[in-house]
Length: 61
Image (cartoon, rainbow, N blue to C red; front, side, top):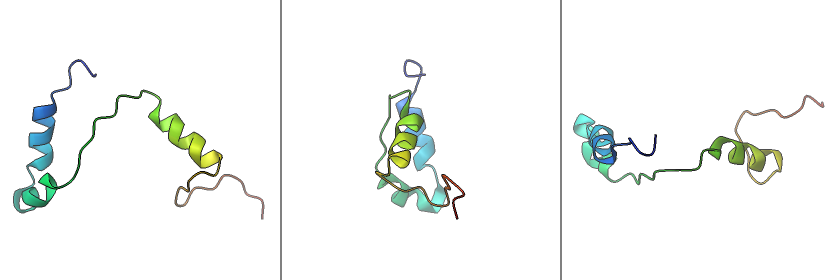
């Protein structure tokens, strides 16, 4: 996907929000190239380095 990603087209579509376009342009946008990003985030949650709202890791009550 990285080779075919059209950043200009993405940003045009991202910013094309009618009356919200000005505020959309102020939102920082970053392109993430790590293929295992979801697993990195999950590992941080499991390690207790961050929280995920409404995520239950066990039913120990």
